Image (cartoon, rainbow, N blue to C red; front, side):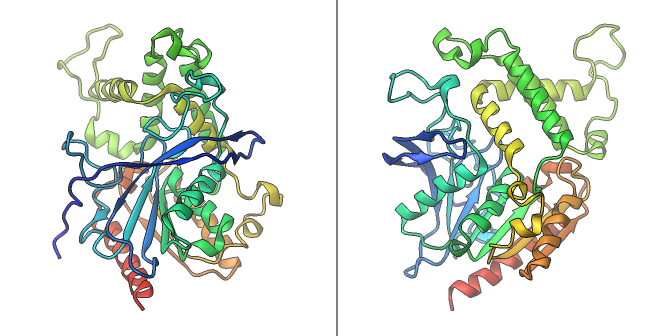
Length: 378
């Protein structure tokens, strides 16, 4: 079957009046989750797949919007008819997490207590809080058990959390280019990015909405730093090398190298659509993820509750979440006698490889989901 797009899609929203208790001890009530669905839920409600998004993505996983056909879903090459996650066979749900800036309740949303944007008052959230909110959405959709929960990077952390937090509610966990916890280096990158945002004079302690400004300079630097970590040195060398925009040195401090131009472009674009407070929240959720923390650092003990089958994929040039971190997860799962499939893809694209077209990677995911489809149709 030739792969094609799911076509025109539209976001949906679900409001939750009951408070959600957060890991921090705070709670949030009267919140909304925005989500999209693709494909049809079968009569047994056994073919549902949850896609968890990474840092700057959203519920818009696949397809296009009628009023903006250029806005293609962030994993459109993975999800759709005839694609690895085949919407002819699966009912796919993409959900936007709490704290985001793409429709779900977050810092930009009005606080019911004041009628003004939450801003800096929005509570810190964790991966576990997102998973608990997703479980409530699943309840509302009538999905008792996911055929699979899948995500890359931060989305893979959510998939792992699902496997131990709700072990009876998923058959398979698909965690791609992820890690069981951030390294000190990764936490350091996040701190520099947050400091850039918080140091922007337009940040105003997180309440910049009231001032009618956006801390764009800080957001630009945060995105530029992040983007460097998503690419490999090899990929950057191939794409940009030491190419100069105008053929020779200008002996100044403006944009001269092609790689500088690329990073400035990415930073400018990001600062136009992403919320600074959301960036702070999501990077802190990344920092806090550590399922082994309550088990004295023992990842095997932390993953012991899991009952799902697992597919883990890493990429050789991903230096942000390197293959060694995925192999830690694999070893812990094997210690627990779980069914694990692991692949290490030799790809030049760094961390971003999980979003790109790679025939070997996509064939692997397609084969794994073929087996899941066979299970849910028995």
